[in-house]
Structure formats: C-alpha cells, structure tokens
Image 1 (cartoon, rainbow, N blue to C red):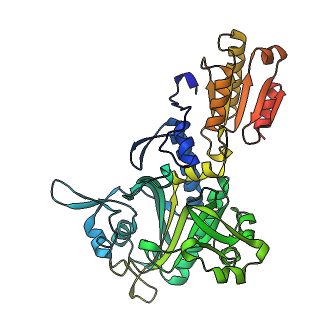
Image 2: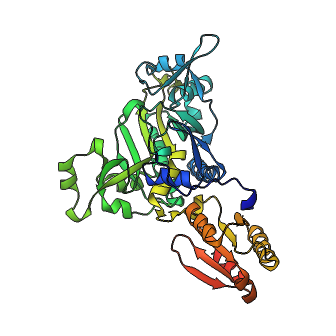
Image 3: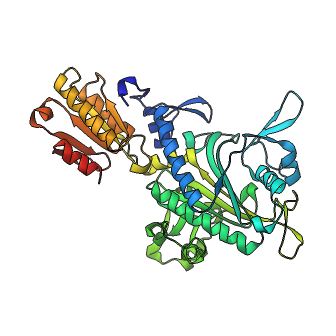
Length: 438
C-alpha cells in the first residue's frame, strides 16, 4: 500500500478532549474519528487493526468449539419482556419504535435473542453441548462516554452463549471459554488476569473478568503476582478436561475493586506477591444457569425423556475496546507500539529521496520482495521530509521500519529498525528479509 494513495489523517497536536493516552494516540495516528459522544468512525488504519483483532478472537473461539452466526443489531422488546430484563436494564438501553409502532431496542447484549434462536430449533439433549457466538456492534447509552473506545456508546463485541444439559456440563463449557480467553489475549501480546467479578445485569453466580494491567486502567484491581507471571495455557491442551488449568488460577487471589476483600487478600497472598494495580477489562464470562431458559421456556428433552431447562453461560470480548487496551499497555513517548499479531502492517518501507530514481527502484524492489514473502507493507513514498516520515512511522507503531536512501543504495544496504526496542541495523536487503522472516 502506497502511503501517497492511502487515507491516513495524522495529527501533530493532541486533541483537547482526549484524556488518556490510548484515546490521544488513536486520534493522532488517524485510527478513528469521533462522530458523536462515544461514537466513532473507524478510519482505514484503525479498521485494519480491528479486523486483525477480530480474526484472533474468531480463531480462538472456533478452536474452543464455538460456532459462529450473526444476529441483528435491533431486537424485539417483547423478547426482553419474556426474560424480565426490559424494564430492569435501565437508561443504558436505547429503545426504538418503528413506523408500525413495534417496540425495538438496539442490542446491548444478546442473551434473549440467542435463547429464542436456540428454543426454535433444539429440542433434545443429543444436540448438546452447543456454543454459538457472533461478532457484532452493540450500543449502550453511557451517561458519560469517555476515554475514547474504552468507554464508548457503540462498540464491537464478541459474545458467545453456551447451552448444556446440566450444571456440570455448563461448567465445562465455562472452563473452555476461560482457557480460550487466556490464549486469545496472549496472542495479542497482552497479559490478561482472570478476576472474580460481579455478575451485574447479566445475572448468575459465577463470573470472571479478564483484566489487562495498565497504569491508566479504569479501576483498581488486586491479585497474586504469580498470576501475572503465569504463561497462557496454549492450544496443546485437553479441551475435555481443563479443570486443573482453571483451578490453578482461581486458587490464587484476584479480584476487581467491587469484589475485593482486604482481609482475604492478606491471608491468602504472601506479602511479596500482593499486587495492587490499575486494570482494564477486556473480557467477561458468566455462568447463569437457567436464568433465561426458565422464563423463556428453552427446554430440551433429557435422557430420561423429560423436558428440562438448559443451563447457559455467556462470554464477551470487547473487540473494539481491545485497541485501546493494547495501546495503553504498549506505547512510548513517540507513539503506538503494536504487537506483531495485531499491527495494521508488518513493515513500513521509508523512501528518503522520492526524486531519486535509484532510491525509488530500490524501494519498489524491497516492497515487491516483502509482499512476495507474505508481509503486509506500507510504502511511504510521500514527499514529506525524512524527520516527518520517521515521526509518522513511530506514531502509527508498525513493528518494523525499513529505510532506504541514496547512501544505502550506493552501499547496497538498507536500515532496519525494530519499533518496540528502537534497535537499528544496517544490512543487505536479503539479510533484512531473513531477519523479518524470523
């Protein structure tokens, strides 16, 4: 992709309305544009990151056995009346009446709709276990939207819903999502700690939030330091028996501010391992049993031939929110530092002399060879001065910068810079390609 033909409206100054670093950098790097309070247009660079995050989330959901569908953004109010949540949910719900006087709502979550879909088609325990997920835009009318995409009104979310014949099976489904979440966030370069959490308006009696530690986090969190140091389980696990993996983590103290018990924290955690920090929620999982299946009559025939309500859980990941969380956890004074897995491009090729034919030929050759090797390349072929090009490359956070100028062409080399460390090396293009390939 040639930068001269791309749409990348970067800003030199920090907008006054941006209070936290992720919001500031998302605006300055041209990732998003605010259209209304808590509502953003996703510009090309931001959309590329959003799609890469979405792909990782989807792959890990499917690896854990979930099946993707897509539900609409608008839902019938009558479904929410069946569950009893329509009047209880509060002013965060955007309620709409169409031209036929039907009451609708812009979905903040999808427990009712997925239960309605399930009950229409599934009648026997033989179809269970089942986990259905989608990645869809939501709307919650926050009283005070702030912090950019971290607390917006419209947001992209992955929500999954499990259906099982009994509590024991449902807790196995919960464990699958627990492990899938640990793997998901690790792939994005994040250390996400599962913490006991309040179930809130979703309901149920078992819930964990997945928290990324960051100095600018939205709330206080308390946990055993060993949880932060614990590696992700990885994909080479027995998906049918994950209890030991879950138990290893939930046996250590970890709680959000709302669930924190100071005395328990001190008694259960060695003094040197007590970690008090700020955190950002990036995922939330719930087991809520028959909360929705009983009022909505989502029953299946069991092995004994009798109908019984299914046991359910729901599992959310804030896909758009993750961009903010990643930036909060990975940036420096110059700009964003994208982890490789979610970066909008893998390499930016910087042409230092666009009016020099030899330099342009060398850059075109480098871009062609990089793309042939499977890399996503942004080619800075603009007339901007070198200092401005370097500043833009650092700001937008692409993992590798490959710079070519007249001196490099004369010597048959390129300069390769790793954005995360600032390390620079000068080497032939073939050697640079080898290093990029790992």
